[in-house]
Image 1 (cartoon, one colour):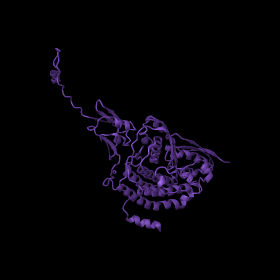
Image 2 (spheres, chains in turn green, blue):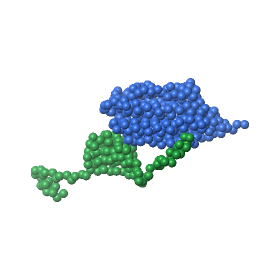
Image 3 (cartoon, chains in turn blue, purple):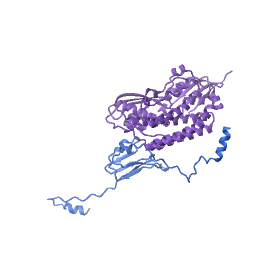
Image 4 (tube, chains in turn red, orange):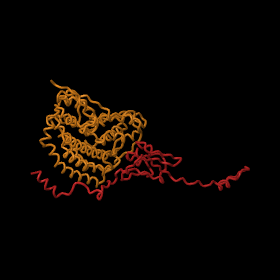
Length: 135
Length: 359
């Protein structure tokens, strides 16, 4: 009897599968899909690289470059917790499949330095002001 | 005239979640001797644990096993907190219990599915794993990931559960309970399932205890040993009894796990209702110094963590004794005498987690 009950129930039940691609599964809010870096607010303090258990981040303060290897990353979020400036965040979507191991390099735009004020000089050389102007 | 042959069981076998090789010497159809060969999944986690920062080790230790991963994280965090003398907020203890019990549920449902598949009952395997998907969805919605949840940290937990998330967990558990009430009686009462599991690999209470088995393996033989009764974490405030069966065969071990799924659901419901307000993490200051040993109840049994700190940010030693390591000698002792066709089912009945064993 139990089996026949199931048979009749199943005749009127909707399918157990989803009508993909019309109906997609959306990742849950707060899912750790991938890590995103923001080079503009980054202070290159190296906290995220020290916290990373997979050594996926490399920070170079001099050239203001952050190198991130997404294929080493395990999306644990330790870097997100370590960053005090809010430059690292998790995002919900998973990364698309890649054909080769990619490396992401984030570089902060380096602004050209302001020419310095000229100093009093007793040298016979060209004054500092003119030298800076011709650069 | 009996005929002796040696058959390798594993390292790849449909019944095994991870690779282990058992070289079985058969006499006609009965097992005479078993020789194990481990080492297929050894990753050197204990050594890497000495090179990592003690805070980074949580992420390493979670990846020892994908099925009981939160239990490893909880045990490691407890060990380091004991070594450093940190007291974590009660809310964090409750949250750890909730996530650990959800892991126990999904681990046992996984095992029940594998048991069904071990004797070819694939449709039941699919149905059980379909229910398991609901548990994985709860983990994804609350912790951020399905398998390796990375919520435990030294000092507490990283995430908190909001009121809606708690209500969502309770709702999902009700649905899971209803589904399980339809499926588990099939597993438990079916004539074929009973024929394949009852009377196979029977071990009496004293032998199971002497062989050093832990977890549902030993609870299926009548020994009421459950590390949660020692009252670590929030378990001292929750009301439950260890699930024990007395028959000592594969069926009894299966029944223990099936009943523990219900017990875990009840524990999660209790913990969610009793969740105290407060913070979820305390600040960690200093470095671990000294030794700490903790025992927790992983889905497969007693998990022991020993952590030795020497005052630097790297640990001196991190040693894990996983439950499957204690259960493998048990299986080697009970396999002689078993028929060859029953070897997969009996081996599976201890719930072997070889990636835990080999770290």
